[in-house]
Length: 124
Image (cartoon, rainbow, N blue to C red):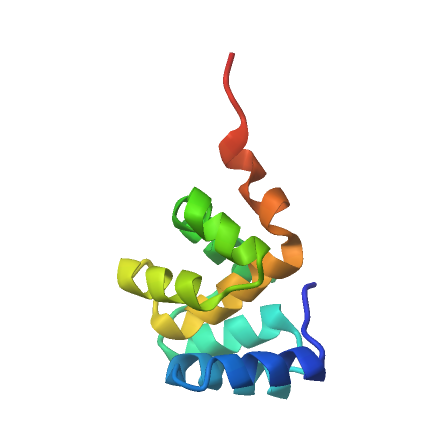
């Protein structure tokens, strides 16, 4: 269960001041005591989606995997730069913009290399 501390939330809030959907997502993460899964489910419900399992955020993140795991975005995330990744994912329209930040934070908390490793498997 990935979660954020209040200091992490404060840090991201200052970085994402120009992203209203990200601020709404951060507010929900605060309400959920830093729990990314709970916040993502609440946000999904608020935009008419119907999360049907407790690991719903993991499943949502997997839908973004091909986009997130592009070399340039992996490099950005590895350096802690989330804004280029958020901008890119918002343009893809894979899901509602309000869910992009929880997905990106989930990937960071999971570990970018671990998250992207299924795409590096080669079938022999």
